[in-house]
Image 1 (cartoon, rainbow, N blue to C red):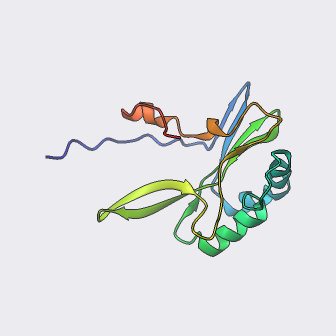
Image 2 (image 1 turned 60 degrees about the vertical axis):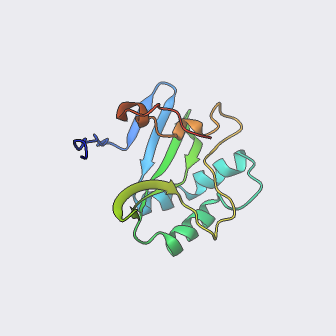
Length: 145
């Protein structure tokens, strides 16, 4: 027998602010495009030695492979500047014949490398953008690295 279905609350506002900074959820393509200069400046500050997190690469990937998905990009700001970026997407897929919703990186076999990244001038390594909702759903709240 299958247990009762559990309703999961969804945030209604894709922006959270604290005294330490803020977290924004970018789901709109136009808003994603507006981030280009600031996104690339953040990648430069993080001294990422490859092009696979540049706005141009991520945008081109989305334009080519994003059909059927929805942008789910997490932007962490500290002192008004982007401190971390998690380039994610939401999609529905099949697992053992059952439709499931998942959040995953904007990547596939055509992306040799991807990551969430924090800048070297912030205290964030990007790990603060990992979902914290597991503990509220009965899981341990710990993510495997």
